[in-house]
Image (tube, rainbow, N blue to C red):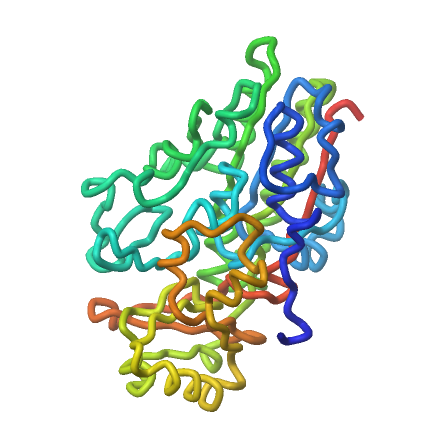
Length: 391
């Protein structure tokens, strides 16, 4: 283990523990202990509890660029993401209260034997051809998406970007929550405010903002475009907080993961390594800062030797099952579907390295600048922000 790798704190300091605290406030339980920084009792007397997930907003980014921000003003502390520190593994937990060991979504590119190839689970499409998997098999047959809100004794809402509000994932994971779409950051807070003002009963609102992550991917974590959008998000949040004063609302803000930049010089393109490619029995899967490798049975020793010699400076090599046993992915008993999707070996990239493989129809692919999925502090630490409308 590299000394600068940050492991998830599933005991009392991760996003999974956060969901345990929220669930506990509404009479539901998860496998995980409550978050040390947020006791369920703190939420019980509020009319509205709002969880806002800002995709890709790492704690380190907030500390670097958010010195005078509203987000920093109400920062309670830092917690860890899960492993992999990636959207596909980390977003479902906010809706299921479970890790990828249970829900089965573990990587952006996932080898799923039931459909005979690699799919992209969240948009629920095939990697090759981008075909809608939902036309072949319902998403709940391939992933264990049991909605946490169905166990919570409260009226629930899912507020998410208009392009994904009616996606296979949103419908399955949202459960009984009423789904509400929005088109931009101002509209997001407008829709949340509308829900706050509705009716007399208690409400739980789960809201998701994806754009920060997208900008980090396309332009880089430290780009001016990413910072400009971050500052706009913060301004709109400030206006929203003022507008809901004395509504007996608790706002909790966190993220699924952070990100790092991967320069061109540190991009490992496995297509350019025919010896590596020849040892694989399926495409590598993952999110570019880690890779699940399916290796031919007769070539496992060769594969280990290759990685330990030819890639020794760029990644750490693990047998995937060993990471499961050591608790990297979570605390639950792993499901069979999970075990089938993590390959024989996991490569966890060091420093600012990334790993990529092009399929035959992706020869002109443009690679991202910002990536995530690894165990660096930038990827693993996310902020916990708590705002009380009554103060």
